[in-house]
Length: 305
Image 1 (spheres, one colour):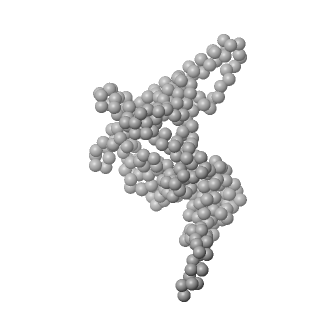
Image 2 (cartoon, helix red, strand yellow; image 1 turned 30 degrees about the vertical axis):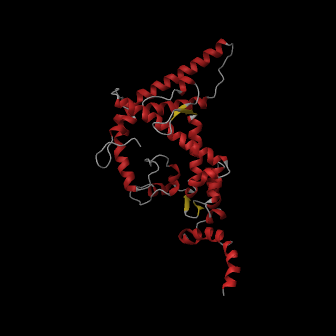
Image 3 (cartoon, rainbow, N blue to C red; image 1 turned 45 degrees about the vertical axis):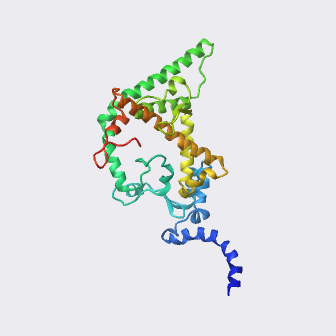
């Protein structure tokens, strides 16, 4: 009786990949009738492949044009292109929760964006809701205006340099300058000081992987773009995240390094601000100041993380 089993066992291993991809399709019978790309019905690999190519939105849009308003883009994921569904899906009382896609965006701790638990999300939202009141937002305008003035000053400087060189116009990449402006405004509002990209005219930011680690420097805009791309891809297959750095594709290795660098930029800025507060340096009213005033569910101040 054992002999047939040993002959059968090696061949049964070949069925495991087939079973692995068939089970999600069989388990989710309630959405089996929803059309979609053939591979997407059985595996997350279709959407992962599209995200890796940077074509996720284009591929999903093309699928909707082919299959209609409801498209199955993963075994347990249905994309809906119907404006009437927006108030239903995004209703606070609808019972819908965030998928494990958001797990790929967790770095240091879960934030408001990637918190999936409804009770925890509600608690965090209440803790910072006062930060975005009309009164608080009005106080931030001065910092935004300051950075916009710096942008104009830098552009005038480029124009003057071009005129002195006999050129009629200054040649520059406006997109880069808009990125510098956005990051400096974010730095001003969130961390109490800009990153200095506008004044330097280049993409650079201090990075500390831990509050006590030595400072290094990284291109913040490039880091943010890479972090978004790799997190978007890994969100299609969250179970792959712990092993992504071992994949031969450098897209994943470099992307995960960008995740660490982006977290390091935040660590460096928050550490500077908290150190200044401990020394008694007067603090201004900005987003980080509001967060530092926030309390947790026990009424205690929020920690560094």
